[in-house]
Length: 371
Ligand SMILES: [Zn+2]
Image (tube, rainbow, N blue to C red; front, side, top):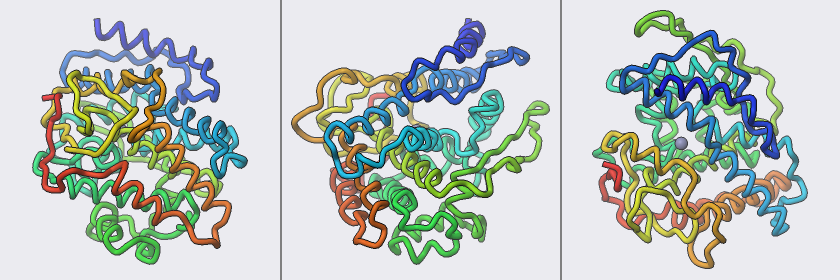
């Protein structure tokens, strides 16, 4: 049953051109490789892959936010182009696919994701970003705690570090070719400390740059049970356009914000019954949730289209599309005026006290309603 479903889904990939901005990254599947779904990790990985393809929630929310800026003529609305939206969408996918496996090699994404699920307890900071993003210490890229013992205050700090880094790259405060080892001069001391912990532990990745990080294009083929070829990133673009990197960084920040409105990732006020997400009229965060505590199927339910997706924006508190529009607008204004005082401090306070505001910094990571 599951097998047929996935093959049908993949067969449908060609039909995605209906979206206004051509947001589907997938090429037609040639059918030469069949997925046999007979264990839990396989089913999970296949289901996530399928939902990334079938429900482009992040992508559609991003397009909506750009439209809102134009509609309301917010600062920066004049410089928005289709190409900018396209690259920002590449960025909202980056958190789920930091090695850029999906567009050309969805089955490689699937094989590696499955392997990471099965071996999550063996992953260390030496592993690549893809393994770490969903199954280890980089779960802040999805506004989640990385373990059951993590306190909300610590998740918030990691999320804010990523917000600061990605915002400053997006707004060209951090030049895209800055080495990680020189990041200290651009980040607050607290954010640099956390950045170092996650990205330069034991002297790793010192010579990486935002341009490299956001252009990674890799492949790692499965060649046997638990056996893979070495990670090959030779297709990475070494001379990416500056604006493309900035837009991918912007998209990555939007991904974290969008995930923070998913009810399975974050429990926000006001609380409600029901395993679905709401994105309008939302307030402070009670807990960041930890995936390990949750039921996979329930979690996934809340990652689909939000229940109030088609309803009007709320007059009170946070509406996800407005939040993203505000962030994009700040970034674009800064990019326009790189020498003037930039909006990071204002944005930081908007994020820390508003969008990622927490009711209790000591609250332990929960399961929400998704146990
Ligand atoms: Zn995510």
